[in-house]
Image (tube, rainbow, N blue to C red; front, side):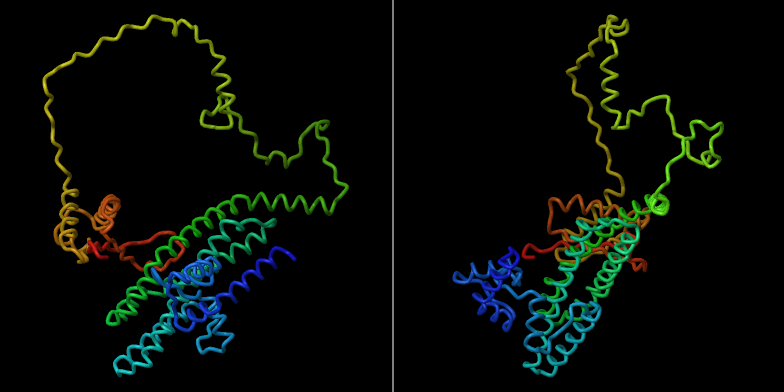
Length: 409
């Protein structure tokens, strides 16, 4: 029996041994940790059957939930390859149905809709987590590991399509709109904020890392594409003419005309000290230089000592630049108004006249990064402008909002 078969048997035996915990997590939505089941829950988490729901609770992963839904013919069956934007539309529809049921005091329907909303949020979070992590793994380990140029182009098209699908899904989320939609439902608001919205920066950073790697590989592809075509053309010529032998041009009176189009060798009269390939050769040459020259053996002039004064030196106090003073006033206002969001652009329009808005936002961002190292309660939100280009690699920010969080947050 192969090692893979043995691993599968161990997995199935583990699932059968903990079937009660899995059933409880599936039908109730969550299973809590105690002294009796702590070891079993940790084992199921290592097998990626359960994931953390909160500090003390676990839930079933989205893929296993969908498998159980399909096996039990549940009404909650959804396809993994469905467009993620459709899931978001379904989530908004379920929230609207929940709000209508809450207004009409239909408690049973409220519970059903809330369970469906919870499952949708978990499925979205798990799908984004799995897709971004899997795509990042593929790019880091398998990208460009092909033999032909055509395969590399197909591979590049595949990764860009997957990346575009994930970017469109995250863009369609519109976190501010979703949170405003459920601000009167604190349970859904907290669930949406903790399980989905706060994880979006992690997914966006992964996508940015993937995009950076794709740019590097595309640059290298363009660099070697012309050379690869020449090599492939010559290889095809050799296959068609297997008896080909290069001619000996040393006996000819003149070189062929097409040789005049070859780029000549570049010769330099000196070595490049910045070329690391020549570092050892340059060291060897430097070690051979004689040091017993007249210049080196010449008597050095005796240096005079500087006079030492015991009188105290006058200290000069430098005045802070105007923009530093304005930044201090802005951050002092944020720290004094705990829990209140203060816009940097609004402050600049009211109190700062001699600095451009873009320069002011750069100064605020730099100051926040400096203070963030010692004050973790200072929260920043970037208000981005809609530039309409998802793959430019840049984020255009039109405002920065700072908020000094309370000690209990």
